[in-house]
Length: 371
Image (tube, helix red, strand yellow):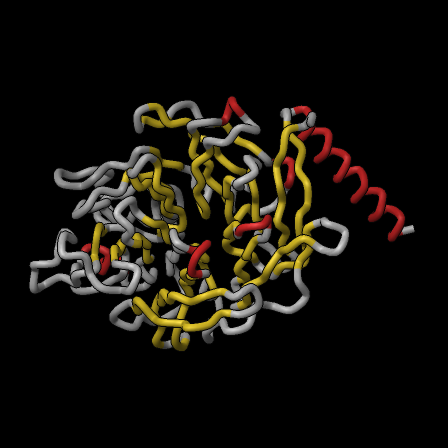
């Protein structure tokens, strides 16, 4: 009887999700299941996909014998050792601009031990089954303690340089304002890890040359729109932010914020100060933004020209239309799924792809309700 009640509840829940999705002009399809805290997705030629799992595995989704997409049973070989504990793990996967010719991709992950760890970025070549020629291009300095606030999202800028964010480590939050450490920063490097000569602090002896911006808490989403990078970051209890990333800018953490600490203590009396770049948007209460995409596809014309923000705490995706860089009225989507959304991406087929954050995580595809 208990099992029957559980089955009926599950069926009614799935029916409710399908009904809500259809009513919203879209339907949600499962592409793959059984992923352990999936974190990021990248689209390969031929309809295949790579998905990172926070536990340190890289998984391949590919067409099966029947032509339907399926998760390959064995993980991709050759992934470097990953520190997987707490918030630490394997984070982003990003294809190189010349991936079709070279098979090159980038991975970001936590490296080291719980007591002394770093954000590391590597370049590798994917041959369809394993990673080869793995090369470290960045390791954050100095080593930090504990396993929180790594950031880890990456994006290519129009000039071919790599932009990626790192969190403040949580325990040493004021390091986000200090230029001798990578904590709480966005970094910009060449694809081989060398430092561009026009980085904003490259001539300062008291600064690490890779730093592009500073004053960040834990950025976990970045996307480049018409050459302009946008990023969001987690606040504490409120104060989540969406920012336009500008070289050399200070984004305020922890001397300005719209949030308070988890203990309900005030972090700072200031929401803004001269010289601090104000956020484009702020979410209080916190939605816990975790992934960011730009949609300009053909399947959903009404959604074109919008940022999509994956939200863990809100269990949703926020659609934020941008008009000349100015955010418009937000729309809350996909709450009927009822799961923490770790990542959101616009697929090459025009569909929206979602990753759900759980020990039995899923890759979901959002398509129009009617063919």
